[in-house]
Length: 502
Image 1 (cartoon, rainbow, N blue to C red):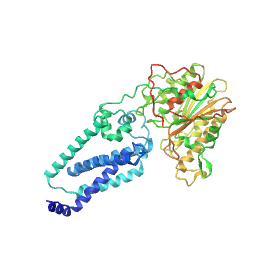
Image 2: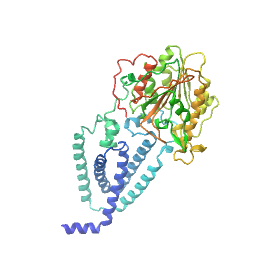
Image 3: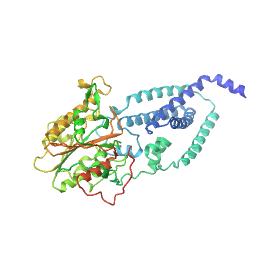
Image 4: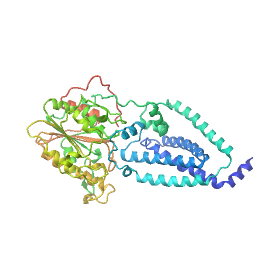
């Protein structure tokens, strides 16, 4: 018996080596995609268990693929490669892992309108996946198993092992094949993979439309910044806490923001991106917690807890400025939040400003701030909101000489452009204006921490305050702003939810 096995191994040595290479390439590609959902492991033993678990599963799937008719094998490997390109690209440009509900939201709304999807493909992962796909197709062509009986036995055996061990595994972790576990979507993906998680989401959809708020306990421990009836909220694309005071080639990248941060109050706010940047201003301006798989501006029809709406009820002028087109329902949502004036890229183009050549074409931040500065009233209270765009993508041309040679020179070039625009705008504001500046989420380029800053700065007579050593969610930061502005609490019928703050 042993002699027969030895003879078989010697005779089919190349076949076994090719099959093993297929298993390795197929497993590495899929394990890397799932690893994105983990955010890394604190201990090597956890990482080892993770790799062993998914290598075992992918090895069984690989054997099944190699036993199938070639045309089916090619098709499965091709679909798997397309899915992994999508997963890697989604993570690279959106900073999280795709859930079924998030993907459904993107394709069912205006989020992808006007976007060249090919420009968002992660080139590094694309090259590796194409390499793995090419080698795997070569292996499928060259691995020949003529025995139909052996193929059937192998396929049935692998399926039995997958479903039996999978059932035990899911039961051990209190998971079901057809329902989402109580942990987050990334945690579900980490434990069960993408296909199983997406299937469970489809069968048992997450109820994402329910409103949620947060406790004011943390906000109550922070000293109050003096309030004003002249407010500007600037939401800066991809502004990380690490960018405050950050230097390249001995030059501060964003000198104006770094300066006013020292002359005001800085709060550390969790920088998780929740599908789209609009969920950041939704949370801060409405004292709510957004579910990361939906776009609330596309679904809600009223915003009774809107902070700007409270200012409007007291006679303030409300205006909203954004250099991009209506990508997530802002044109519908902001009037419902109390805003009378809206200027998106269509209005700015009509006013004579030009779109730039970024991947997401928009009005340059300097032009956006120049236009917004002309709309500031001098004789009445106001609450204006400005959302920037330049820092979303690195500059490709006209690199700032101060940052040349750095791997992120394009990102820092655009960061300085945004900083210059904010400086010119803030310096034009009347004295006594409270300027609130917050990053929408952690960036795709440059230095990255888990926090974004919320800077509170008073024009004319700055009010420097010691920054508290407290990590807030955007909803908790909004609770603090409600205290500053002496506004009523959030509606009592909205459930208070404890959100993890990193």
